[in-house]
Image 1 (cartoon, one colour):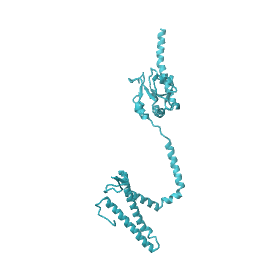
Image 2 (cartoon, rainbow, N blue to C red; image 1 turned 180 degrees about the vertical axis):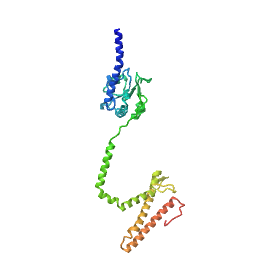
Image 3 (tube, rainbow, N blue to C red; image 1 turned 90 degrees about the vertical axis):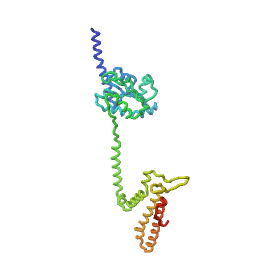
Image 4 (spheres, rainbow, N blue to C red; image 1 turned 45 degrees about the vertical axis):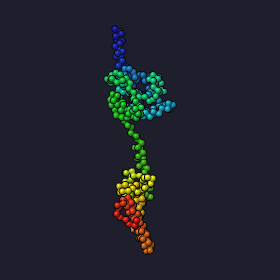
Length: 321
């Protein structure tokens, strides 16, 4: 009778001890910033008790600098991100699964027992009892070589295995929210202090006229066509270099630069005839300026027409050449 009573008390205490055991790991996970439980050889075996009613994902790693394990350090932020995302789940859900880490310096006995010779190694241990017990293998190893070290890959591997699917949370980087306002404030301060020098430039007709001419000449010379079509600078065929592409549907980089230069010099000739020559107080200088700039204009325009005729022999117009 006494033996029966003792057996009954042991059976009653067993689920209570398991509950305390689960609550112990729950408190450790809650006390960790990332929800990761740091293990030793002893606590590793305790966490993976054969009658556990929870699952666990454990990374066996070697983070100390003395081990020089670069993949361990590369994978550690990913494991922390996934563990932190799981920690955001409701308490009744996250207490059914735990994330843990066993460093080689704290668990050499486990490494030897498992026959591990490299790190990191991620193992998922399903629940062996309780409502979450399934038909999965007792240990499921994450293939780092195939899946990589990224957090999304690890999350995709674990999401079907944990008691409830969870979203991968990406922490917000506060640096841009600090640097952007400071940069805008600093830029505004600089602009305000330079306002007496910048306003005359911004309001200058000469500056805006020069910029407008540069843009007009750039785009009318075929610059955008070269960029879109990725046209070569020159063409080399049979050992000969050509800078003019035949036909109106083709163009080379050097050709567009020559055309742009001709457009620019023609524009400057018109500006000289309309602004510089009339500004001369001497009538003789004005007459010479008109003849000079008009001759330059006619020669340049003749060269431009000649270039069009070289591109397409059927072009019917000529001037001097």
